[in-house]
Image (cartoon, rainbow, N blue to C red; front, side, top):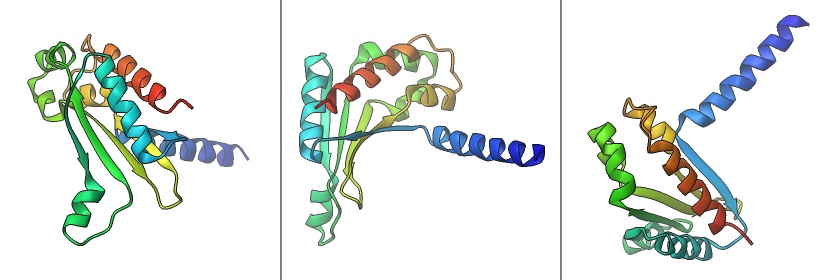
Length: 149
């Protein structure tokens, strides 16, 4: 019995690690993909961040005769947030500006996902970079606000 409990706990821990290891955080949205992205874009702008691009991947697929469920990417940021992370590790520039993806899955559920700043800091070897907690809080706050009813 003890062996079964240990095995179960190990399996649970490994599944949690696998989810965390991919570096993505995603939240289900009660809104349509367009409404979710429109809300997020407005929130980002209201917080004084610059929107560099909004890419409609489904539209891109359609332009080459392919189909894709609604999928949009928002690229945004602010040098006040990104520069300190790059000062800790310039290689973090490959992951900046920040990105958020909104998509509709095969079941019709809408998701808002983004790269976990803590994961990015670890990826670039600077898990203790002072700005990371600010980025974690900012992204969590903006995305939570975007999916509010």
